[in-house]
Image (cartoon, rainbow over all chains, first blue to last red; front, side):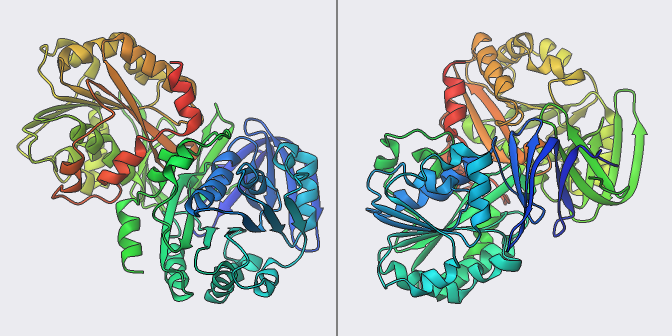
Length: 283
Length: 283
């Protein structure tokens, strides 16, 4: 069956499934030095950013992903002051991180300046905190940056990257995790987007094994809905000294507004579906 | 953009979004007295049942829905012995209910016998408990059946229905909820599939208001992923005397196997995303 020309369609070939979003018009189409970036105005999901054919975000549902990527890790670390975001060029995660008053410095390292420029133009609300004096935006290779970082110089690393194919692949390796572990020291917390629990169980399993091998003593998987990502079901993986617990009372008493994240939602997202628990138990 | 003829596509017109599943072949196509039922063999989701163009279930992901529809309500009631399922003709919810040893009798009332016949043929594992002596399958109007039921004659009612448009619409009304309340008495628990928290927040809000108006003293919303339903994010609504609590220890010590549901997952599913909590607080 066919959807007309007024639909954006992303196929997830590994699952033989596809997501369609009806669009009004294409607002931008740019081949940067690194990737193909498209921006659409959709009928019901607001604006849509697509990179190399994959949905990155829409106005309507990005809050779930960005809040889960930022707040879970920041409420897991006892006192996060120094944060690095690898990727995250749309600046949505950065905005959430900056809601935490104890954060003193956040550096966002995305290789592709075009993503941030287009986000500033078409998703201005995601970029509203870019002017925060605590924020530093760098456009270079995040892996090299982490490798060059001083030992024990970061409290939280957030890996807000594309999928583990193509340029994002190296972000899902033991070598990268060891560099993160070194930059984080004993107390630091890593969080990384970790694909669909249903479609990519094997990737999840490998990640947990690789993180342990890189020296992280505990790992945890947070699952949450993400309607415009393949299967509508996504996850983030935490690694650090005690990531199955978090500052629950601080989260419950937070003084900033969220639309998805709450302390109870964080606790609930840590509850693994039976089949995921089983897969990770043997990781 | 077009998907080829080898794709099944469901459009969710209320959200201008669409789900595609690549199919190998169509296995059945039947116009029953009530609806149009299709069965496909998909490439990666096993078999697929479609009613009136909407995905009802696939082999790969139906476990999430069926487990959440059955176990949450049964572990909420203090001692469920008498259960009625309205709809649920594929028998997947029935199978889960019958895993509870304290259940003495389950009646499934689906108006369309063709759904059950096709499920027996193409989804035999969902029907494996149909021969349980505690199970009774009836093919008639479930609303009339509930209206005619004796007062205080049921412990749990599970409304496993289609969407609140067309024939399913009457299942989302105060009149139906009052009939359920009467059949359940003071201690009984109702659970009903309640659409997507993201796409159908208004339906959820109205349901909670209507359930309270029908005499249920507490309501709760469980949310969970459901990859092949619109937005990949679904919910079930509970109503009864104390549905925000459940027999957590019994759930943790259950002696049957589940693939999604656990006691912690149940607790987590009760944690409302901030925007849903806000919507329901003003219901």
